[in-house]
Amino acid sequence: DIKLPFARSFAYSNLSRAFAVIGTAEGPASPAFDKAVEMIERVTDDRLRAQGFWLISLQQRLAGDIANARKTQNRAEKETEEIKSLLSKIWMFGDITDAYLKNGQKIQARAVLDKSVAAVRNITNAWERTRALAKVAEMWLIVRTNGFRTAQRLP
Image 1 (cartoon, rainbow, N blue to C red):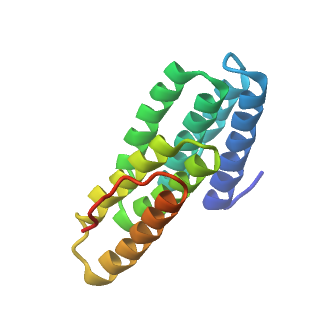
Image 2 (image 1 turned 90 degrees about the horizontal axis):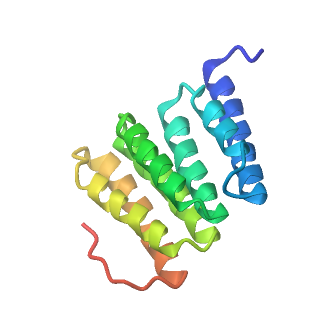
């Protein structure tokens, strides 16, 4: 019954996250993962939808369902391409990096950080690029201080 489109998308996004967490608790064959996907597919906001797929993939990985986690991550990457604002994309990558690190997924966190570095290189607006570089630097420091010490040259 929520009338505002973003508010409705936000609600579906949160429901999706809840189902994904339930799926992790129940195990790799949990029908809650299907419900999480069903909820996130109702989201009309590009960033929330993409982020939802990333987070479902993380929960599937935590549940031990690596095959479906990869499929969901592929969907997340396709949905991420739909985000028009590179700055929004980088901010989302920051949230995803943080979620991966909080769940001990250091390699995946580093891979998302690398996607941020690639995205920031395509920003031409000086103000937007400055904000994006600050966010990427923050992400790099968080990844580095959480035990993943691979050197990376930032742009």
